[in-house]
Length: 145
Image (cartoon, rainbow, N blue to C red; front, top):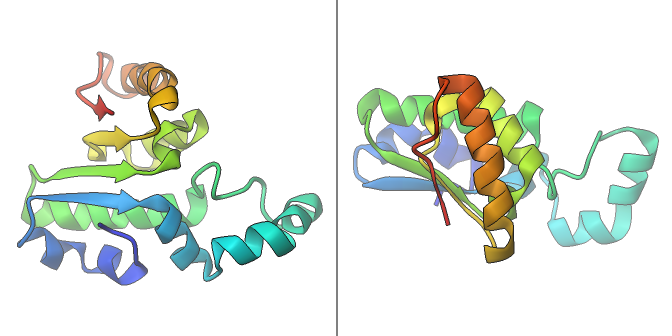
């Protein structure tokens, strides 16, 4: 599980000894923003959104400027030493259409699978297929479960 900033920054070393990597995006979001999800949601997220400090809740839709970019760095580092390593994400971001679009834009073809709640799988498959058509010009080889 890639859930800390350090694991992302050392993904090349980790990739040498693992068969796959999965980004735990909720924990990674907490680490990148340096705040507790419980604290932020109950105390100040609504104020951050109201004041425009954040454009959207990063626990609902993945943070493009921080978390997604960090994931891209980790994926590139991991694939530099193990080009065919399986890499995916787990958690609710994997089923969020806006997160899938952001990841397609920032990460491109770097992810092999998305894991999400069962009720989100049909929409996630549709959005992943649409984004893959934009990037690849063909249907995806991405697993969503």
